[in-house]
Image 1 (cartoon, helix red, strand yellow):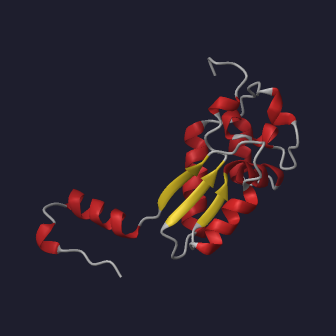
Image 2: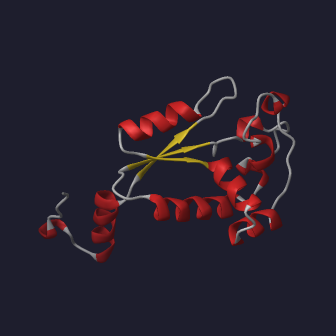
Length: 142
């Protein structure tokens, strides 16, 4: 169990920072290349090391298909962007449709934060896969 040395805490801000460092999960972003089957690997690592594993586009897909409040917000802020052709190949989870690049980043981040809060128990690390997809955009300006 983590302990806090209160003699070193000088302010509310530093106490808050110390609490976050001791009790908040650290996030690890995983790049998902279509040529590598990453889902099973991430799931196995998460199990072995007691991590929470979240696939950004699978969470987005779940909320949109289930027509949740999050799904409705995501659809209202959807802006389809052309993706590189490779992404359309072997895409059993329909990442090309539900990729975070099609949605407002701040909204996606709030959704992921809420998901982490709901699902985290005693995990110190969270693996988030599929969030960093900017190299999958067809247009460099996007």
